[in-house]
Image 1 (cartoon, rainbow, N blue to C red):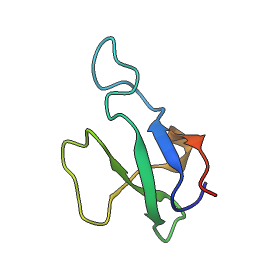
Image 2: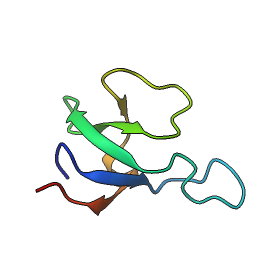
Image 3: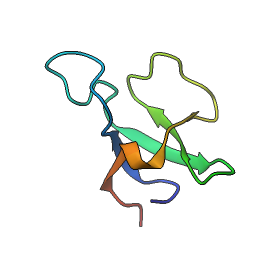
Image 4: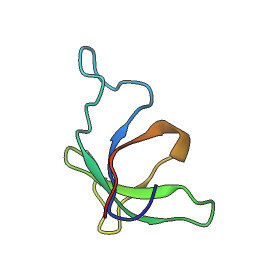
Length: 65
């Protein structure tokens, strides 16, 4: 996983019937523990630099060139 990759949150679903309620996200950077800072299209609490998620809960959909 690297900056610019398109990802899905593969952790526990937040709502019934929608396994990916946050939609697609883009990796913006990484924290000191190498967990990705991501901006998801349906993020309920967006941040300018992305929100950090545990990397084991993120699924890469499309790698950046």
